[in-house]
Length: 362
Image (cartoon, rainbow, N blue to C red; front, side, top):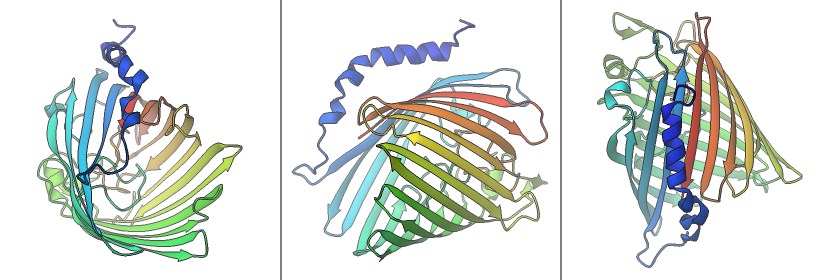
């Protein structure tokens, strides 16, 4: 069993047990049209096997198997959309280990993932209230897409020509992280979207984010790699983030690249971060093969370490590379293998992580 970690054996057994499900893909028969009642179902599942080794100050490697499922309902009433989603999770690890393992969600839980109202105030204007996906478009350098803040936001877009668009999104949110988080986030993002829907297109998005009331997160052990003195954060966190993305379809093959740079204007130093990703192919459709790589580097106070993606072991104060390969089993199921090599600043040895994910969506 030393040559094949037990968590990988469990994962293979789980895949084997669900083989008939993948072959039949019953989700492919689900209609996207609203049923007679007007309610639309939606959801996703994630099965993940992980091995992380060479963790600083730990002698053992981390091996675990995790499951997460979300199930939701939404319905539109004229211009208003209501949505609610429940999330359930189970893992081979324990909830009391989540802080030590730098997780942003509990391993075993049942919770409310979304509860929101969306009002289409005009053809190009939307107001959103409640607990749902963060409406500010950010990369894993700054934000974990699994987090669901509570807040109010508004978005407006302006068409410029036939294929170009100017977009503006802003809002105020409660972070609603783990352990009775009391953080607050004010955010504004301006975006230019060029040649949307064309074979060659791009975007540039500039965001400002002001994080406040972070002390509860620090007291609960989620200060992570951000600098602290006597239990208080050294820096304020007022981030300016710029993303530039391009995508091109060449002979039916999709190419994508994105650069993200961030500066924390609330820090006197250790305030900068950057991420670059490049992707060939698309695993979001049946038979689609995708190969990608992401490289990122962020200084200690460049971002709020509590909110960055927990797919990466380090949440700031590190540099690393993430190659991955993914395959679309069907229009609803995809398999992805991701590797991470990360090095914390001041250390010579790298931390290595391997994730094997089976994802289903409908």
